[in-house]
Image (cartoon, rainbow, N blue to C red; front, side, top):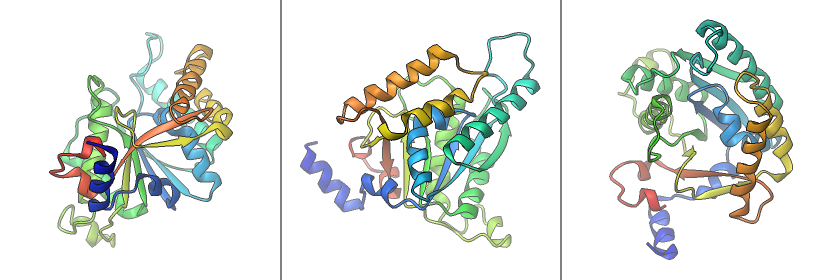
Amino acid sequence: MTSSEVEYVRSLIGLRPERAFEECGTLLSIQPHPDDTEIAAGGTVAKLVKRGCRVIYVTVTDGGAGTTSPSIKWEELSSMRKKEQQAAAQTLGVTELVWLDYRDSELRPTLELRNKLITLIRQYRPDLILTVDPWLLYEAHPDHIATGLAASEAYFFSNLPNVNREDLDRGLKPHLTKHIAYYWTKNPNIYIDITDVIDLKMKAIEAHKSQFGPEDINLYRKISQKIGEKRGFGYGEAFKVLNHYALHVNFYADLL
C-alpha cells in the first residue's frame, strides 16, 4: 500500500496513532513480567506521567523463572522482582501496580486471564492499553504471546456487557478503550521522542538488579538510540497503535 492508501484506510476506521498518546489521560500497561514496560516504554511512561497521565501497571506473571543461577529459588526471585518493579515504577512516577501472579514461563491465553483483564479494564477505564505484540515473528516466550493475546481480546471485548457479565453485578460498566499500543513490534506506526527522559528510563531499568548488569543497560540505551535515529531523535521508542476496527477481519492491519 502507498502512504496515501494507508491514510485512507486509517481515515475509514478512525485510526490516528499519534492521538493515542497525545490524548491519553489513563494508561493501563499490561506486561508479561516485571521490567518489560521499563525496557520497551519507560521513556514514554515517564513523559506521560510528567504530563499528568494516570499510569497503572498490570504484571501478569511472577517473574520467578528469570535467572540462570541455581542458587536462587523461585519464591525468592519472585519476591525480589516485585520489589525491583516497585522501585522502577516509582522512578518513573508510577505508583499503582496490580499483580496477577501467574507462574513465569507457563502462561497461556486462557479465558480466565482474559476475563481478569476485562475486569481491570472496566475498573480503571483507560484511554490507552499498552502491551507486548503477540504476533512478533519468531517470538518463543509463551508469556509474551499469551499476555499480548489476552490483552488484545480483553481490549476488544471489554465494551460488550454480556462478556464477563459478572462485572455488571459488581457495579463495573462496560468500557470502550480508544486505542491499544504494542511494543516490540515489527511494524510500528508511531515513534516517541524520549531524548529528554532517557536517563530516567535507564535509571528505572537499573532498578531491576536481578536481571541486568552494566552491559545490559548500555545495550538498552543503544537500542533506544537506534530507534530514535529512524525519526531524527536522539533516543526513541516505537509502537504499533491500533483500534477495535483494526483488530477484526481487517486485511490491512499490519500495514496501518
